[in-house]
Amino acid sequence: MAGRVDLDGNPINPMTICMIGAGGFIGSHLCEKLMSETPHTVLAVDVYSDKIKHLLEPTSLPWNGRIQFHRINIKNDSRLEGLIKMADLTVNLAAICTPADYNTRPLDTIYSNFIDALPVVKYCSENGKRLVHFSTCEVYGKTIGAFLPEDSPLRQDPAYFVLSEDASPCIFGPIEKQRWSYACAKQLIERLIYAEGAENGLEFTIVRPFNWIGPRMDFIPGIDGPSEGVPRVLACFSNNLLRHEPLKLVDGGHSQRTFIYIKDAIEAVFLMIENPARANGHIFNVGNPNNEVTVKQLAEMMTQVYSKVSGETPLETPTVDVSSKEFYGEGYDDSDKRIPDMTIINRQLGWNPKTSLWDLLESTLTYQHRTYAEAVKQAMSKTTAN
Ligand SMILES: NC(=O)c1ccc[n+]([C@@H]2O[C@H](COP(=O)([O-])OP(=O)(O)OC[C@H]3O[C@@H](n4cnc5c(N)ncnc54)[C@H](O)[C@@H]3O)[C@@H](O)[C@H]2O)c1
Ligand SMILES: O=c1ccn([C@@H]2O[C@H](COP(=O)(O)OP(=O)(O)O[C@H]3OC[C@@H](O)[C@H](O)[C@H]3O)[C@@H](O)[C@H]2O)c(=O)[nH]1
Image (cartoon, rainbow, N blue to C red; front, side, top):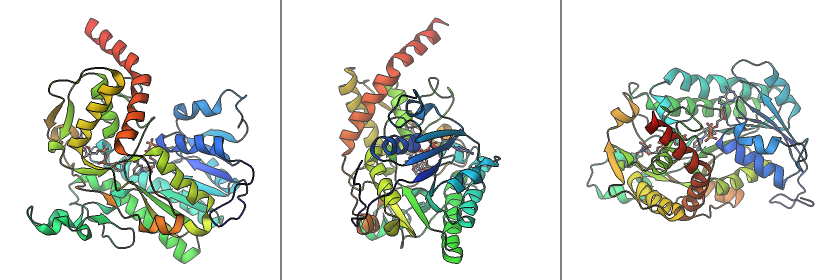
């Protein structure tokens, strides 16, 4: 830890970080690395702490005293401003961010992603504190290419699908497609933060994650989350594999995504935190353009990898088609393709992702199998007995 320097060779001084949403998937990885590799202090704010329990107890941990957990719902807690004032930097991760909620709980989604983030932005701006705010790749919505005829050769031209922070438009569906409630709320909070920077000098960085995946993402329904809950695709497919049931392909699984390993992505966030002069005032795509697959290909790859790590033979029919209406309900819509332009993050922070999709699935599914296989087996035998 001694002698740590930033990208310009300047010493990095220990700082206090107010991390809101620290108990979630990304927050837990960020806290873990901040504790083990830096001298920084974290004021961890969340309503849940299960995913960071291993960092909070026992008190003999080497970083004891450098991480404090504050069980706070930022919707209605006056302690928030005090914590932001005590910190040098606020990282805001708190959000409802599972697609199954966007069309079924659109009000909660809009409040969580816009209204609840407002005081955070205001306290940072009024108190002259730096803000790193987590937005999403969903602010791009659909690609321009999605509106071209199916057989148009222009669909192959990167200009019609690569998503750039400073050039691509944000293309959402009609209001009745409530899927876009999340993307729209995130877009408006980005615009507000940007305006606070322009008019009031707020020092900010906006992060647009492109499908970060890895251990501790979401929950396995009926094990550490509600049985009827629908998490994001990694946890949905993991759940199917653990239960030996076919993976469900929504509308044929034709949508494309680029997946990045959480540990690669966290390195990018570290560079932003510790290089304010290079990160302030910027919006950064953080993804891995080399890891593109259709959801169907992801299902096939996860089936193969899970078989390798668990030693279990895959089902003869490993996938099944399901309509989006049946799976998510009325008002669902989808992003067709998401390839991040890496020019800005490369130029400002010299960062590049490293881990291939196969490798990141292998380590993640090893974790899923080790963590959940026994619990799933027991839950399934109980159901059968009843
Ligand atoms: N994981 C990804 O690939 C991804 C992609 C795009 C955007 N993001 C964004 O990154 C951020 C973190 O995502 P994640 O994957 O870690 O999700 P997550 O759901 O695991 O973490 C969010 C955390 O925020 C907490 N939270 C929510 N509302 C709160 C409130 N009112 N008060 C206190 N805590 C609250 C939750 O309890 C949860 O622990 C979100 O803003 C999300 O929109 C993530
Ligand atoms: O069981 C499933 C689950 C999901 N899917 C599909 O898999 C794709 C990915 O779904 P995810 O649940 O991971 O979520 P998405 O990639 O659509 O959105 C995510 O992206 C960025 C973040 O802001 C959010 O974390 C989330 O909105 C979608 O096309 C979805 O329809 C399936 O085919 N089967």
